Image (cartoon, rainbow, N blue to C red; front, side, top):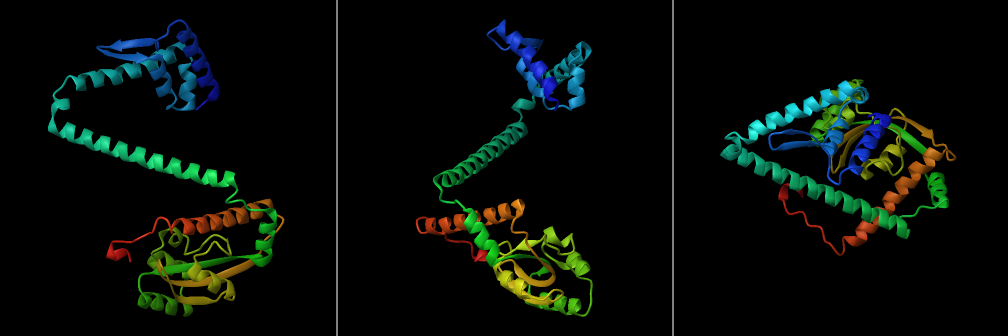
Length: 275
């Protein structure tokens, strides 16, 4: 949206508000009203070009006509038999339940975000420059590799045989891998440093020779066949690299903190199919 257009409209609204303590009414449709604040709120949802047009007298009236038509439809619907129908009431109840669930999810996300922010303020997740340098000295490279994820060791072994015989890794990954995120890219991951790969594969991938194929390798996700495509040094002085390491170390500190919390809030997987 165009900031200048919205500022002008907001200024007009403020001027109107000065002359009235109520939200100024722009139009009425039966018992429904269209207020200045509603006009602004709905205008914010349209394209920037149309917002510019609404700054003109004809544009303002045209947009008001759009809102009037919406309220005409609403007024007709309110006076019909639909609001009293069982189907409407059932769908409305579902809508309310869905909205309550969204609010709960939003509340939980906000609470989690603020709790982590509080940990940062207290210094529990602080990562020093020395810690970043030490990590880069211990793990100075990143790797490029691909994988095919399969459900059983037998399927993974069959895929490994085809790949070792010269089959296209990208083709096998696209056709057979259960990891949709990488399958569409031929099984390829972005460049990853130590600590960014799932633990069951990490040490193996870093020990492999470039071009080597390994597998089947079991993880909590299934069975992997992997190929190492490259390994290159990290630029230890690059700010983006150092920030990347800092985020990784912060996550590790958060994970360690959660392990301590788990003593207070034991985790139990109840459903057998997830054990």
